[in-house]
Image 1 (cartoon, rainbow, N blue to C red):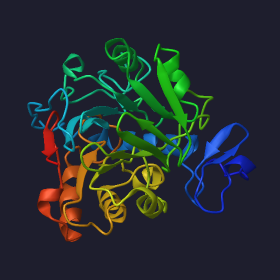
Image 2 (image 1 turned 45 degrees about the vertical axis):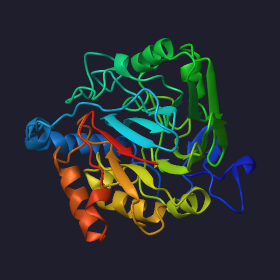
Image 3 (image 1 turned 60 degrees about the vertical axis):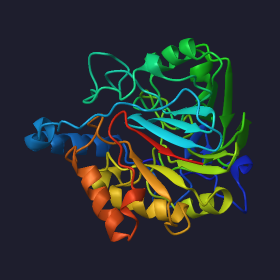
Length: 346
């Protein structure tokens, strides 16, 4: 496990939490937030092989798919969301089309013959996407930043604006993206009628053996002001951390959150980097002024790639239970099928 060194002065602030940066690497700023190390990974993998039921089963359930119902451009003030799969979401705020953490490849891997394989096809064919104005990247892991997908999107949507955390912009630039903004936590950009803020997350980064934490990770607060203000939060990939309340105070309360609910077992290994369903619901409540009326949550990061040990159908079931236990309205939990579109009128 990597220890947190002292922060560089440029990332210190008396008023808001910032990532720790030292020796060319980033670290989560909270105590006990360091991800598990390589020895812990080996311990997990050895344990998995000793429990063959985790490796080979239970069989992946047949998740129901839906026919997308998005339009090329939304009406002023409207809000629509279509779940493509995993953390890939088509978000339409008014006439602005945003895409989060896009992956259309069959595997979340640097190679096409190995690595976690997609168990459910993308809910939207990449050639069927509407014109994309903004692509949001939360970090550089293969299930969130896919080389083949980035190349296809740049070719099909050359005018799109890409927004990425520190160190990740070069990935898109080297593949031909025309406009890329690189942000650290709390920095903002305006694109058309949308304001986008980079927000804290508790995670890590790596694409190879020697680049761990060389680039930053984040979530995004998204404000649309075309017709009526819309406030949406995309958590990216994160463990539960203390900054959700600070994010809500500055950019909320949000009327819609996109929260990761999967890839959380074994808990001793995943706790620092992935929320479980109960933690995701608690974070949603913090982001929405105590679960204010009609504040919706879309669960993401589940049901597409099998990355960890929990049964594939467990995350949505536990999310339903946690939502009910929190006393939240059933109709505000938008548990979407792959490809399903949910529209909220102005």
